[in-house]
Length: 281
Image (cartoon, rainbow, N blue to C red; front, side, top):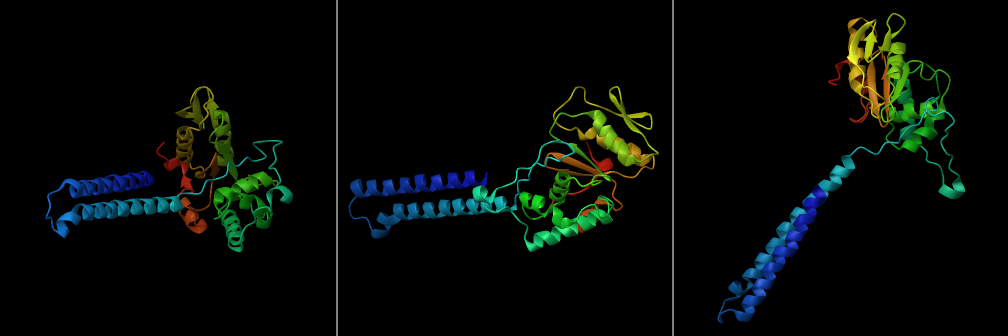
């Protein structure tokens, strides 16, 4: 929108300034003789003023657009984990065709190691499931700064044994299966609780808590998940937190609150953990 405003202001500078110049020329040609220098220069002064004012407006709008672009979240890569996309592998770049493969900076590697360590201490990842350096290539494909979504996505692509023992992931833009959603919550809820789909309802310990969307919609509806998470919380089950990233929803039962986890991870505002049971959906 700021670039549109800049274009409008630039057009205004040309139109208004040009109009005053044309008017000044016409007055010079047909105006009364004996006019003073200031009187003769007045239309051209107005033209210069109009160009300066509209030009300043255009420049400020363009700068505002540049600042907005710089502050906007970087495009995030669509992750395809081996568990969800069997047989599909990330193509390997050949240096002779594409140049050298991307790599993380020293700061990026430190942030990767820090993110893995925090997720392990918070009970989101099993301890020692992977060495951070083994994920550097996959995280580098995503770009910097390193985010939790990039780390989890690279971990899913690497697919070490047991990497998702404490996690569940659901695709947000694919054909949805309520039974799959219920199974993810059921696994995280532990052996003392039961989450299942019965007919058109999601049940927690035998009690219907939400109605599922009929058919197989292409977008994930967070409402039934949030309702089931609230029911589990009220029954004393581990609280479920979620993290929304591009194309994936990550679910976990962290040992710390999402606010504390976010503070430890120091993530961008578009990638924050939240309690699923506090969602408004």
